Image (cartoon, helix red, strand yellow):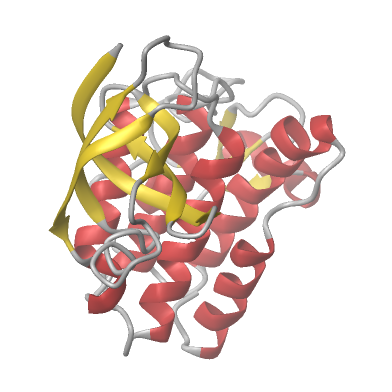
Length: 244
């Protein structure tokens, strides 16, 4: 049993004296764990930093075994590129934490992989990536089976002027249809449904409130867990930076 794929490092931990167990998110194979021989050595430790893009080969005698990586070659050193960028590093850490805790092991999510790779590519562009991160969370909900219906108003069927989302159904409502119930609905920022809409002040915060609500209730509450602390720290940093 073996495969070779592009992957993103999700994390690693020591295994014995010199080995490590690395978890990767592979485009065509999903979230996999495996042994890295020499993983705690000077050569491999920088490669195993969360967020790095690698070319990973996974091998095992039987598919249900832990397996090992050979090769595991660095393509993009994302982690080192963000060492002097605390806000970008917080975005990366939060995205990685969500992928680790919402995806099924050994199940492919090529769309989610591409979205994460795109987010990683933009983390140095502070004026761009917070809105992209917000879209990433909405997309993640869909990829793990809890997508929101943001295409049309649940009341009128209209596709324009969508402004709210029902916290009960996850369906959108237009500004006119939702206005009488605005206090009970979640705000839907225009940039999530209108491709060329500008991102206004408060839009990223509203989007994260929207995705966070459904992540918490449809995913984490079912497991008796809370949202990852890394996500909370990201929101705090975005607020301090004036990027919400």
